[in-house]
Image (cartoon, rainbow, N blue to C red):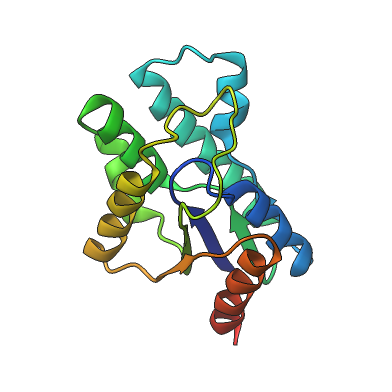
Length: 170
């Protein structure tokens, strides 16, 4: 049965790189973060754009899952949209709230902000990553979701993630 592993956490914690590296390690597919594509075309987004991005992320996930067999890695999930919406707009659209409950994953890899901030025109919170990390952890705990915290620099970060995925697949 297909296992779905979602990477989550604050921006600039290596989610995209880790999702791609894990897909190479396990010779499988991964679902890129749709928001990045969307925001490259619309950098001045509005609150309503978060719902559009979240819905398209689900469509992208469903397309890749159809082509996968053992494990698939997701470079984002709905908690990301909730944390960002709560942080920026002080509330979250009910569709996103429901999606968190309806679309759970076998394992969440919560990427810690222990790596250096990498400047990028689509990133905006170099100083709030620890605070945001704690919001992710609180949601994962409150919902009783299966997650592991990913720490480490360079190849050690990948090896830490691999050990948790291996546990899942065993």
